[in-house]
Structures are given as C-alpha cells and as structure tokens.
Length: 448
Image (cartoon, rainbow, N blue to C red; front, side, top):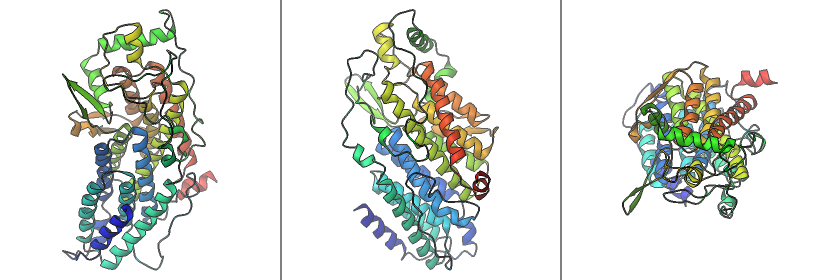
C-alpha cells in the first residue's frame, strides 16, 4: 500500500507545470538545503512517531545510504557503498546518454526510503509534494525531472529490498526481555516502569562492523552491596554528584538528554514529552558541520551517510553489551542500598546500564566527523533550541563527544565506567569504520 500511494503521488507531480523558466536551474537544484531539509523532515517524523534510539539509527542509515548512492553520480570522485556494506549489492545505474538532476534523485531516494520506514506517511507526503514543487519551480525540464525521480525511486527500491533482509522484521516477534531475580541485573525504572527496549538488537545485521560483539568493551565493575566495594563507590559517586550539581552541569545533562519518550507525572496525570534521539542529535551536528563548511550537495550526502553508519553500528555494538551484562541502573541501586529518596536529574531510559549508548554513538560519530572536517572544527550546536534548551559551543567533535559522555553521569543515569568505557568502545567502532569504508576513489586507491 505504501508503494502504491507513493507512486501515485510521484505520477501526480509529473503533470505539474513549471511556474518559472530559470536558465540556471542546474545551480538552484544543487542547493544542499534540499538535502538538509529532507533529513530534518525525517528527524521530525522520527520524533513524532517515537522511535527508540536504535531503531531511529536504522532509519537514518538506510535513507542516508539511498541519498548518497543517488547523489554520487554528480561527482566522479565518489564511490559506491556496494560491496562495502554488508549485503549491499550493486545499485541501479543511470543511463549515461541521458541527463539527470542527481540532487533531485538523491532526495527522492532518501524520502522514499524514509517514508517506508516510518509510520506517519502523511507527514512525509506533505513535505515531499512541497519539495518536488520547489524542484519543478527551478525551471528544470520535465524530462529531466521525470527521469531523475524515476532513478531515485529505483535506488530507493533497491535499498528498501536490502533493508528487508537485516532481521529487523523478524525481531519484532522475538520474546520480550525477562526480568531476572539476580540483584545485579536491570529492573524497570520509574515513573513508567517500561519494558526493556530492543533486547535482541544484536541480532540486527551489522552494516560495516563484522559482528555485534566485535568491539566488546571491558566488563563493568563487579556488582556488590559492600560499602567498601568499587561498585558501591561508583554508585555513591553518582548519588553525591546528583545531589550537588552546578547550573552548568544541569545544563549539560539536559542538553544531551535526547530521551525520545519522557513520562511526566503531575498528580494523578501522566503524559509523555517527545524529544530528539541521540542519533538525531548527531545527524543535526552533521548538518551544522556541512553548513558551516559550505559543503556542497554530494559532500553533505557523504557526511550524513558516514555518520549514520557509525550510529547504527555503534548502537548494535552497544546493545550487544547491554543485554550481555544486563547491569542495574544507578536509580535502582541507589534507592535500594544508599538513599531511597534520591531521584536522578534525567529520567532513566528503559534498558540496561552498561555501556552508555550516548557515549558509544557520540564517540563513533565524532571520529567520523573529525575524519571528514578536521581535528579542530569549532561549531555551535543549536540542536536543542526547538526543545526549549540553549546552544552550546565546542572547539571540536572530540570535545563534544566527551561532554556527551560526561552528561550521563550528571544526569544520574550511568556510572562512570559506562561513560568512559562506552566512549572508548564508540571511538573504536568509529575508527574501524573510517578505515574500512571508503567513499572517495583516492582513499580506495590508497587502501589498495
């Protein structure tokens, strides 16, 4: 049904006449804002549909790979992901004797894949129709428009078929996580006491890493309720830190919260607040970097795709560890063994503690962005403005990811080892992907 409705919308656009005849349509159509707005639209729908962080990373990756694969025909120095990403076979190719608008094909591919993987198709359709009209309004010839849309659809269909074999659909019917009697293990946390999120995410097919367990971090500190033990000390640190937070530390914790589903309790009323996911935050940092560096359309498509791949494999690696160690959250431990009245600043997410997901994916993303934009790329992160928070300024991606990791301690939702070891885990994932996956011919030649 999704494909039928989408094709109907695409065909309808083919009959829309151009409202102006720009002689420089090729320049207008190259504007990377078309791409940035498309990514932002998918982010907005992901927030609206309340996808968990791992699932959101999957959506970002498939749509960004599709956008990249259609865009690279604009610039011959870029190479395909086919044969590099697990299971991705050679994609449809344009007719070399015909003219295309590859940026149009790129957003077409990206939006169609995004629409296939989200719930709110109507929100995607409304945005799609508006964006396609803007492309028509550049004065692009009808045959180029039609041909480019058709090519984008072919790329999208190929990527959707690839996505269908990653075990995601099968995992929807896997059993829920069973609560264990072991006092060291995770238990649902207040206020909603939700089920554990994605306990079988390590069964999802990796994209660039060899397996979910390839970057297994060192084990967490051994559980103990002995007040002289290291584990008790780590929990005490979080309790004391949470009880004495500075205004700056509170701001940092809130800025990197990125909890897509926060339950609020007001008396007898409970309601949810929707926020951007950790992956969505780093995809927006990618937008900031592209815009600040004036990256063109293809370079921007490359950045989104590479960051998305680091996100999705980072989550696969992290979730593999979460459901191996199944470690108890600070809130549960502190309330039971240290201070029954203590409440963390941030709401505890519904999955085991170790390692820290935000630390892992921030480490992986920062390595990828540093490779693309340099070691000392200063930027202003305005991601959280629309959620009522402030901007934050960073001298580098490395410093941003370090703050993101530390924020989980300030928020009271992770012990120190989960943040520090998670950051190392993510950086290892990112470094591996940077070395293994090539997007430019010069890098491919050098590797060979």
